[in-house]
Length: 325
Image 1 (cartoon, rainbow, N blue to C red):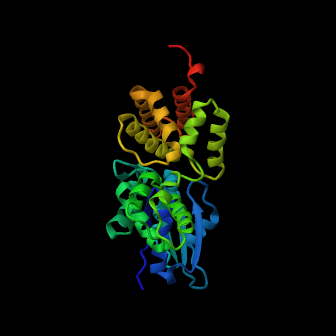
Image 2 (image 1 turned 180 degrees about the horizontal axis):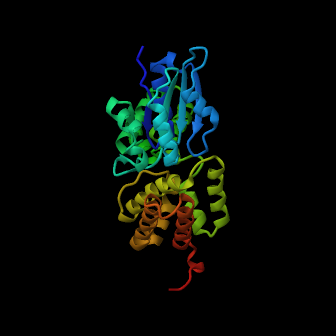
Image 3 (image 1 turned 135 degrees about the horizontal axis):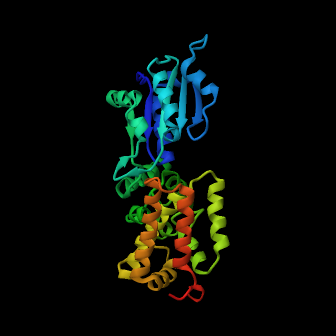
């Protein structure tokens, strides 16, 4: 049995990968996490959280105290936490999940946390786990690993098709692979079957752009509000899909071979041709402006989303509705 750390930091922007890491840590020390309590850092921490963290019960029940979105905690709360962690409770294993976006391959740790004793001590002890989530290289490995776990055999070339099509989000990838396992049955997955999937089954970004092109602004906002209702932050989710779509439209415009659903090919060629080089450059500029405005602190994610939607509406508006310049 592995001796558990005094406390742990798990840093990853991908919620599914982060949850998997927490499960692996707890599985390695099963006696240390007989009870599990989960709280959220973007809500005010209740008194029960502090009691679990600091108080010892009459019975030696080991408890895992998982704090999601811990990066959202205010500076004064982190100071209180750091002081409490300096007097460890042997019955409680705190696990802090930092789930904010990364920049240039590095986690963006809040400045007030990065210099606290609890964080620097954990880092020196090797109690900090970091993962940037899925990138093009790790996405391929994740597809191969999950396909093997699901018993999904694939024809040569299928991994390349899926890596080009699927979003770099572990939950979305796992869901699509589960569907493909049912589709393939006992036979190996064919390339045609691999091409049949959309980048996401619930939110197709190209359909989203086509709604903008046809002037269906109400339908567009309905899709965004549906994501918000599920507790998702739509901005970065939308930006990830738009970046993939913009790359594909650029390839289409340049005449490069692109793997895509055959039913979308003609529509994407028309969209790429209508936008042209100047329009695609504006699309990239709008995305980068939205992302930078949040990371620099000038705008909240909601404000940046509103501005991005305004830029996209102007860029993709039907030609007859555009104002003359």
